[in-house]
Image 1 (cartoon, rainbow, N blue to C red):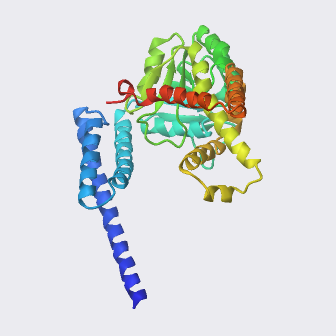
Image 2: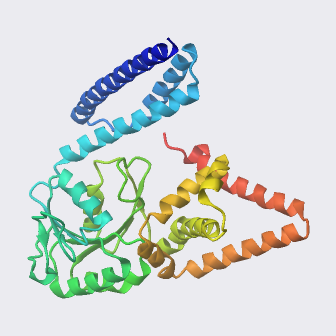
Image 3: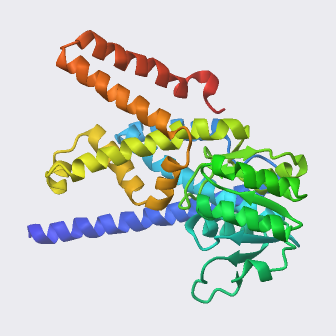
Length: 372
């Protein structure tokens, strides 16, 4: 009898789940219609005021239904993100910026190369790929760079940093007519070849997408743009991202690697150190995971994502950045200070360090820096 009751209850859950999916699908259809209206009225894709209104309403309804409002908010934040992604794709497809335009992606079969290929194709660009070897059934593959008629509107270099130097030097001899754009994470090794290419009469711009190839929604993401002396080329590169919600940041070439040494270099190092210490601890990963805390889980997930990235790229980010030794020395100095603080029982100094960090990090959520 109890088993029969359990089966009935589970069947009822299945029915409810199907209803939920049907309602989400109906909501997504409505989202698409709203997206069309936004396109017709040239309204922005994202409306933070409306999102706040939706979340506040959901929390009120959840409380009325005796459901934890935090759980309801988490669910709807994911639904809203999915809806925004759908509307962003609609806007990219409708931009028509790539109509009658061609793009060549050198290193186009790498992860970021494939992301750019898809992104440009969505804008109706004719995309050609140059790489070491083609993917299966790849009809737009071009094997030999020297045999390609370089009449593309954009040539995007999506190769490893050291390889990008060689490509830029090669393009200086080939003199393409379109805009040459590198997407490297570190810029200093590219300084001379980028400037030499510019001085040879080519149109050059340097960008740094601050996101990985798995990203779908560009809201709250950033692309750094570096002016190499051709304002029209810079504006054309920015136009590629105009239909999206990405934040376009202008930066001087001289500032890029210094700032990136903290944003990428330091964060990568900390996560590599975290996972290396665990991996060499002799403790079973499963045991540690079962004993995890909220902070440990969060750090574990971030570090796990880092370990799945391209280790050769991460090596280049550390090795080729001239500011990496400064960061490593600062990290080493901080560890030694902490060792001394703990060894000498300086609790006050420890508290001061944490307080200093707390005050520094509040800048991220300061009202003057929030989006509206």
